[in-house]
Structures are given as C-alpha cells and as structure tokens.
Amino acid sequence: MGQAPTFRETLDRLGRFVKQERSLLFFIFVYAIAVGLFSLIIPFSVQELVNTFAFAVTPVMVVTLVGIMAGILLFVGFFRVLQFYATDILERRIFVRVSLALAELLPRFKEKTFSSNSINRFFETVFLQRAFSNLFVDLTNVLVGGAIGMILLVFYHPYFLVFDIVLIISVVIIAFLGKGGFQNTIKMSEAKYEAFHWLQEVANNLIHFKATNCANLIFQKTDSLATSYVLARKRRFKALIRQYIGSLFFQVIMHVGLLGTAGWLLSQGQLTLGQLVAAEVIVASLLLNLDSVVKRTYVVFYFFTALVELDHLYKLPTDELETGSGLPFPSTNGSGLHLSCSHLSWTKKGGVSQREINFEAQPGEKWALVCPTESIRMRISLALAGLDQPANGVVRYNGIDIKSLSTEQVNEQRGILFGRDLSLFEGSIAENIIMGRNIATEDLIKALRLSLLDGELANFSDGLETMIVQGGKHFSPSQRYRILLARAIVGNPSLLILDGVIHKLPIQIREPLVRKLISDDCTSTLIIVSTDPQIENYTDKFVEIPDDFIE
Image (cartoon, one colour):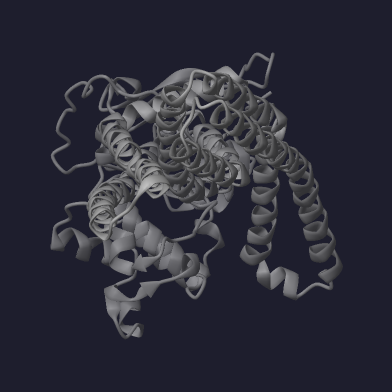
C-alpha cells in the first residue's frame, strides 16, 4: 500500500467518518454524560456513609442511603442499556454504509488497476465496527467520567488540581509511548492480506498444485509471508508494552500521590475522612478505566488501520461519473445497429501509429476482425464496446460518437462476450443469463435457442434453476461459453460483439453455433473479433489487422 499516512491524513479520515454518524454519536455522548453524572452517587454515598459512621449511625440512615443509591444505579443502568443499543445500531449502519458504497463503486472501478485482492479490504468493515464501538464508547465513558471525577476532586480541595494536571500529562506521555504502533499495525494488515491472497491463489489453482510436486513452494512462501506478519506484530507489541509499562508506573505514582496528599490534608483538618475515601474511590475507578483502555490500545490502531485500508479501496481509479443522460439514441427498428470505425489506432508509449482501422458495418451485417495477437484483439473489442478509449479515432453507433452516449445507453444497444474470462457468478443459470434485467420470456427463449442451450438444459435436473458454484467449474468450457453468450444475446442487443475463443470450441458445437449467429434468426449486427483466420469464412465481410498495427 506504500507509505503510512500522516497524522493529518489520519485525522481527516476520522473527521469524515465521524461526520457521517454525528447524530447517533451525539446520543451516545449524551448517554455517557448521564452515566458519568449519575455514577457520582457511588463516591457520594461512600463519603456520607463514612462520615456518618464517624459520629453515629442508625439502621434507618443506612437503609435510606442504600435505597437512594440502588435507585440511581438502576437509572445509570438504563442509560447504559440505551448506549449499548445505540452502539449496536451504529455497527449496523457502518456495515450497510460500507457495503452500499462498494456496491456503487464496483461497476465503476477501472479494470487495469482493480484486482480481486483489492475487494478483500471489505473485511476491514468488521474491524471497523468492533473497534469504533469500543473506541468511541469506552473512550467517551473514560473521558467524561474522568473529567467529572477530576472536577469533583478540585471541589474537595484546590491541591487536587495539581493531581489532575499530573494525570493529564501522564495520559499524554502514555499516548506518546505508543509511537510506531499504528504504522506497524498497517504493515501487519498488509502482510495479512498478502498471505490471504497467496492462499487464495493456491485455492483457485488447486488442481494444478495437486498435479505438481510443489508442497515445498506452498509451505515456503506461506512461511515467508507469515514471518513478515509476525515481525510486524512484534514491532507493534513493543509499542504496546511500552504504553502498558508506562501506564502501570503512572498508576503507582497516582495512587501513592493521592493517598499521601489526601492523608496530609486529613491530618491538617482540611479534608474529612469521608472525602478521603471518596477521593480514593474516584481515582481508583478512573485509573482502572484508564488501565483497561491502555491494554486495548491495539483497538485504536485497528480502527485507524481499517479506515486506511477502506480508504485505499475507495481511492482506486474509477470511471468518471456521467453528468447527463447522453444524446437521444436513434431507433434501430429491430434491424441491427449501424457501426462505423474511423481512424481507430493505438500507439506504444512515445510512438506514432501509421496503421488505422476503418470499416463500416451496416445494420444486420456479420463481420469478422482477424487480429494478429490476443492483446490487439482485446483492445479492439473493448474499444468497439465502448469500454476503453483508443489513442485515436472514433467509434459511432448509428452515427453518434459513443463518447456522447451514456453507459446505460451503450449497454442497452450492445451485447459482448469476453473470451478471456469464462467464469460465472454463484447463482442459478437463469440469474447468470438475466442478471437482474427486465427480460421478456420470448427474449430468453430466443437467447437459449441462438446459444444452443435449449437442448442442453434437458441434461440438468433443475433446468434454468440449476445452481452454479465455484465460477461454474463443474460445467464444460463450451457450456460456460454458451451461458455467457446467452447473457449477451438475451437483452436483444442491436450490436453483438464476440471477443475471441469461439474458434476453440469443439467443432460439433462451433459449426452450428456460428451458423445460428449468422442466420436471419439473429438480427443483431455481429462483430466477431478473433485471432483465427478461418472465422472470416463464416461472415459477410472481414478486416485483417496487420501484424504491425501497434508499433
């Protein structure tokens, strides 16, 4: 992920996050104030009880005091329940907010910079939920309760103001002792994702690893990645142990200092015995809460690390948001789309291309573009589909530059099948074909017929409802290809682009499939982009791309 974020960047991320949930956080903060104020009943009750015992005590006084204390503590418990409920709502909102934000961004991520490993950062949401609830609620309770307690000490005697100042300085020093913990937590996180990605790669290519004597490779690389994680965690632990030792040292100073100061004030008659005991209760409670927070400082590191990791995901390059709906698209009247390419070219960095693609496909025509390499084939397919911009030239749909059309318009008019990735998502065959679109039954039947799946479905007990798992690995390549082809056809597109691999299908499937697609039954303008020269024998027209097309 690169260099660790600066302190200012970290605060900016925290500020943006808190701003989104400020209304709910306000209630949690108010509940913390209520809990802190009403919790004062404990030191007050102890103070009164000790002072009463110092003189005289009756059972009625004890019962009254205990009754008042029980009632107020029940009231405190009510606010704690409200705070607990608000915290759970906050965790739900965090999960939903992150999930929906990623759902919106995913279709817009640029393919060149996005990888499947990037989406693993989504699991930081779980750390963010737990860490933020612990961080904000616990710290708020400690800060509010501590502030109220320190103010109360000053009312007991002005000398306790010095104690409060020393306590604040101690907290600052303890925080400083944790220097380096955040950076090493980020390194731990990166090492964790690298290890997970490697194991995921092994799982995705399991058959190849099983067929090769490579147990040493798997073990050694996993061991290396695990070592990186352990080293980062050791460095992080050094920061945590420094903080904890510092916390214990200052706790000793605080306890001894308070007891000594309060005892001296008691001997001078400037403090009552009840106030001394109450002060000790306040400080003991405050230091106990501080000790609990210091022991869980790693939660703070996890929280900010989760923010950094999710921010890293959100900042991946995306397609620009479209501000308009695009130009009105002329009707094709079901006869296919008029596709024209003018001066289409790419160049290597610093080069100048002398080769261009110029062709014009009339509505309903079937064309083949024969490419010399797989990379050129892929570039041309993406450009024709409006998914990539060539260095030079214009692609027009029905006379309109596709850059002037919205993505939604282009997707409605064009269907495409990418030959490089024949994987399917987990769901039924019907879901993989329809993909949530509003598809008429007759269009689905037509897509199944053109892709030669109508007869194939009889071999599956559940037909279109047959479930696909593991990317469709239990289907043959030709079956996966035809399911994806049906997906491209089912929207009844005016333009159908087939990118590669059709020539790799078994001949008993390829021949009838191509003949179906070039028949009058398929009214779409068909563009087959392939590296197989034989494909031009099936189409109306063809263009041969020269070997030196990209210089």
